Length: 386
View (cartoon, helix red, strand yellow):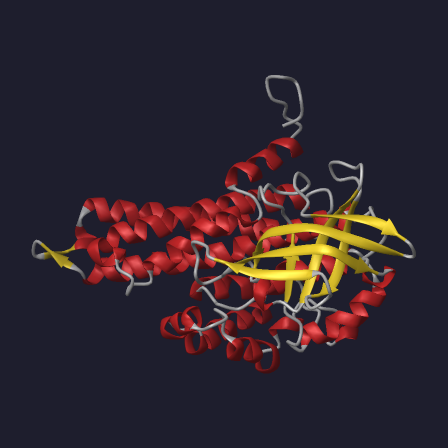
């Protein structure tokens, strides 16, 4: 994402790429995948302490540098290039905007300084068993009991939930539907009644978890903002999260395009480098067009995240464009590499798996198209809002 970046923003992107070229190698990624917890603790510590990444979008009063969302997107783009096995996206792309958007100073003061230091690793519980995007399938219910609250339910498809020590949970009040009655709850992962189970998924670089909440007692101090009134904060979180995920996807698409181009210039078949064949040239050109189109959509979206009336539509455009670009480029990379592209030893399959799973995390491209249609005021043939 290099459209009209300032010199400072360009320096941040270059610094991040240099860091990940050293600390985000394929060998290191595979070592993290094969480790017991499936993530790179040392890399996370370096991101926090050496690079200061975790404070990029956090306010200065909590120890952050308060640079902004463009800078945060640049970091996500670079981590997407290396499939970084660390909880950067769930922590900074989802949990941070949720905590900031709800405007609860007490909870921010409690958790954000520790988040900036790297002590807090967050996961956000967004969906239930169906995996349908909010507000269709909130994972938990919340009800009043005595002087406190009780949380029950099960969150599925929680990104890196097994490494998180802070959980931000979307919960629904009884007898509500749609965006009404939704709350945000911030809980330490070792709270009584919470059980975390790591689950096997397609993408080994970013594991999923299933988290159960069984009669979890919650006091008022854990509620992020007013009970049942979290719609604005949740919508903000989803918009920011969609754009940060799109930045990751763009980074992944860029990297596989580079891998494929380099290979096409070196691989010789029938006495010629395969990049000289029309079929390969056209496939690479199609990949390049997809990447540049996605880059434009992302640049547009990240600059509209602070415009409430435009952020959701812009985020959905970026979400659809970057999801489709990454899936296309990852699939074409395997085809261009031929037999070697299907092997475990080559990284092409890791990018393909990340592309497929990322395209479902905050809604499929079809979901994002529906959001755009709704924002445009379109209706389907039954006359109801799309």
